[in-house]
Length: 487
Image (cartoon, rainbow, N blue to C red; front, side, top):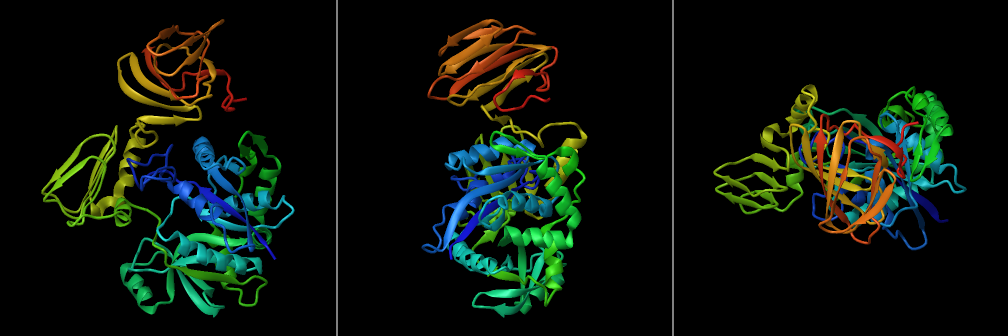
């Protein structure tokens, strides 16, 4: 019998561990670290672009669970893959993975089929994709029989940064009964785990039927199930997104899949569902730190990983990452040096996990470098800050073909627009007109205006703002095709 399969991509994250490349508004799953697709896109592709065993599996469009801040990033990156038929569930507030999976299972349960859900964190790296898919085939068959399956990463060192899974008796050829979960151990305990060969790293990847999860979460955490049912029942469709009721969902308890259900299943030797673990040895990484990224990139003869415009001399065992400028390193070792347009990180590898102290400082001092890059992405394209000073700011706007900014006005600033590339349709008060390359216009303070790209190529604009206040919150929207007007 054919099994229907749906990827559930959990796309949360605060963008702190790989700062300054990753930010709150643009966390690591939406970035490319290999020069190709982003981690988010690779995660989706591992399931939706897999043919499976001939005739055994039907691969359905993915479900994505993410927050409001990242909704347009997720939608755009799915569109780039040709996956506009997917569903994006928006969490108005974070409540950990158990409620996220419950919402996805409720959405999947509306269909005639009872699909097997492949639950995937969106920010993991997998080197051996065919190897992952071979194990996925095993997991899908077990889940189709009613098992709750998780993947355990075969450890190659005594890692203290991961939780562990203890495997039990064998189930078939490749799987084991789920013996139990263990919190992150100290170094001595981690070495003991590695020596036994019975422990695996907890990957956070699960495979199970939608109905199985709803049954289990209802049995072990009925409060979570009720809150999710109520919030989903009051949800509204908004373009690409399903918006949950914020007031109802905020009352949902926060818990992980492991704590809410999986740990309880390991204690049920004779329970109705048998939890299983499949060992996974496919070059997996959660990319939880800058050294972890260095470990999955090619190194030179001195153990260095260099990305971008980099020169290194008498330098060893270092990660040198340049996004915008020429980066040179001489006579150093064991360093992480990350350069972006608006920030530079220099850290010893042993302290790379401490970058959260930087983002905490940025929050405490009311700065924005932990939230936004110099280039800020919007559903219509992006803008990049070029220069700013007292009472002025210069930006470069790139508007996608066919995209339209909101009809808006500002209380505290005027704007000058110069077309660098493409054709712009401008609404200014009661007037509407076209501008082409090297033409410009002026938007006085308090005048209603809109910018559109009616052409087939990206529209590039240089915008000069001037006034007493230049913050992004000085925008009053009257019309917006992306539903960003507060009711």
